[in-house]
Length: 173
Image 1: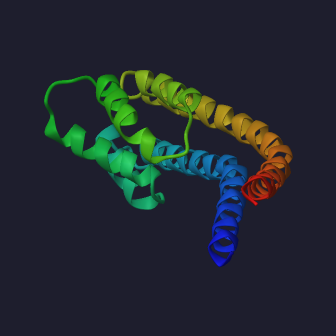
Image 2: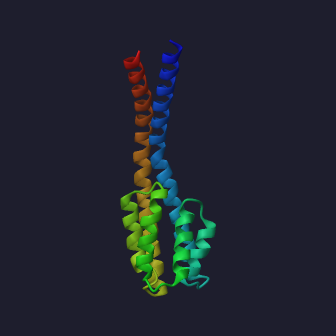
């Protein structure tokens, strides 16, 4: 009887924690998008005011943003320092595809960032600044959209976690 009760508690708690994790996943994605936005502001200021090159701006950015986004920029900086002759666009795509699985970003976020990377380094200073500002405004809209959706989903996932846990325990008993 004690084994059954212990197993039921473990199953119920696992279900509740899964519901909690699923309810927080969108908020983790929002945090990652905010860090990318912060990184873009840093790159913008480095290009605009410090007159840094893109590799220098990326390196400085990697030191100023939080994990896991900083890892993307650290890896990009190390890849750019190799100077193997690949275009910045190809290196950026490679880095995103390799590192985005460590984040809560989705495919649509990666596609946005890939589009941003296509123009980074190829345009003049003014065009790069405009491109960064456009990307930042898109990220702002995306954060607002995800946030409103996350608020409604948060309660649902928590409730489903509890209900599924109760259902499994009832079936086991």
